[in-house]
Image 1 (cartoon, rainbow, N blue to C red):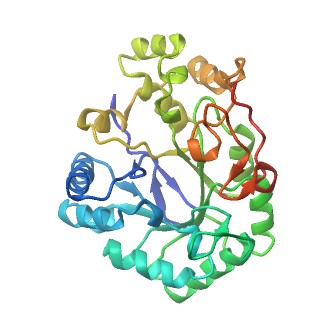
Image 2: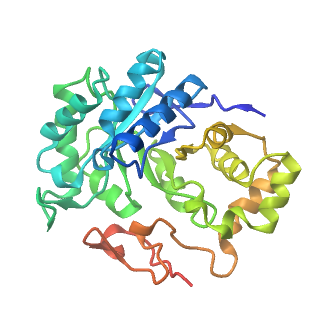
Image 3: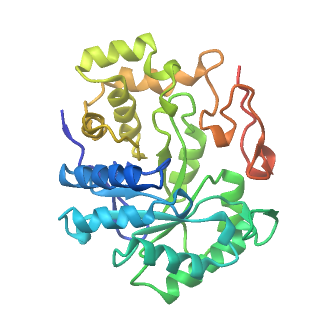
Length: 314
């Protein structure tokens, strides 16, 4: 096995590394900040060239500091951040604030984090709509072409993407969604591919649930390939030409998360169909309904409004 250096050509002409380091759940504070900064520096020095963050994570300053301290040229790093839902009506202001916090010359990909909009004080609002927010992001790209190289979205379904594409003059470069063996998103990935939109997997290991990483067959595959169960799962996702952004502060795991075996076709097929087992097809990320009781309201929108299937947690 060797470090994954696979890259994908985006519809805007830039290349995006297949593997990135996620920064979700970063804790703001002296100890946590230093741990995250040192983690990012370590990852970059060991071969990572893609960092994923967001305004809502509260760690953009840490991410930017780590990039500057890493010694890796900025031109070699693919940096993604995201628009906070509270700023859909203030896209330019939000972007410039992220730029100031990151202090990293430019942003490779700026995503609409959720289709839902919130007011500045966090209340649910129906305006602006996702297409209206997207048009504001297009205006941002045209005004600051050297600061924002690409635009994309996150948590979009076929339904919300169709609505966006009706008004878009710039097709999103990526759509970042929850993907793992229990939620492979085959239909959504196929739809995005047909429109030239790359899919990025968040929670690619399914929140580390035992149902995936302790599954007997997946553990057999790990033994077969002399690697961890997590490496098997990530290898499967990259074999599907998806981007993965696992997050870890464990140095050994950071290296495992970018080093994969090449899976045999029959093993890829098994993982493609893993979700078909009884009780397996469901979301695991808590904000998306992956709780012991489940729910179908996400940041004020129903699954129907989001265009999501109502997966049942059993």
